[in-house]
Length: 120
Image (cartoon, rainbow, N blue to C red; front, side):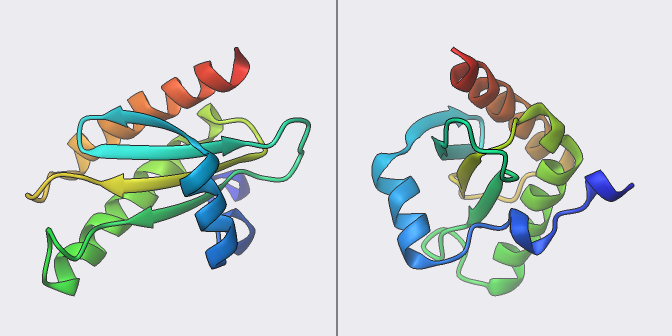
């Protein structure tokens, strides 16, 4: 399905855009994911994301890339929970690699929290 893709327009690019989310965004934590998000009221642009896995916790790029793929995939499958116009920064906080199912469950909790907070 076309709505289950993660296109270039749905990726948060640029240092200034990421810094704005990091500085002015609100935070949510669930399990292995810490999240900063910034809601743009009235925007019909698609929600944009960026994923970060700290090099401090995972020295090998293979592990970091594995976790980033799992986080992006769990977001892609559930992005309908999130409305348009939200910029989100996901940070993986644990020091061990969790299986995909655990990351998926934490992503569900984070997206529900963001959706609930942005509606209120």
